[in-house]
Image 1 (cartoon, rainbow, N blue to C red):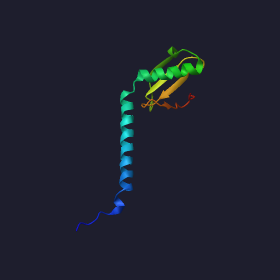
Image 2: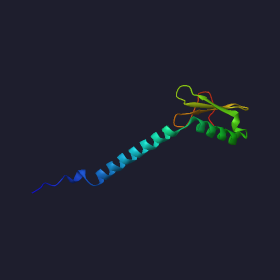
Image 3: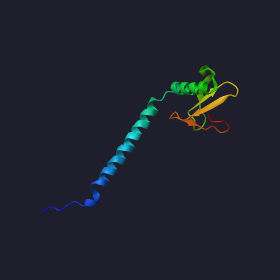
Image 4: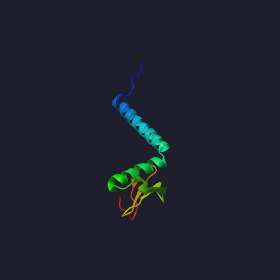
Length: 102
């Protein structure tokens, strides 16, 4: 006669573990895809449009430069006052010490 498997290691525990692994894998793939397809031109354009919406100025007033330290890019927009938007490698806004975040 065969011995039965321990019931504590089946059912809900296995389903929960499988769901957790699936969510972690899907999140990793999504973030990897986003990082691989992120283009500096698109990011600069997005922040330039944001600046234009806030100030009413032209998006052409903005220029992107390589970031310092943990920043991937800095989008510098002219006007009074000049605004600098810090951008991480994932395209998210990052605070720049000494600058106002917008």
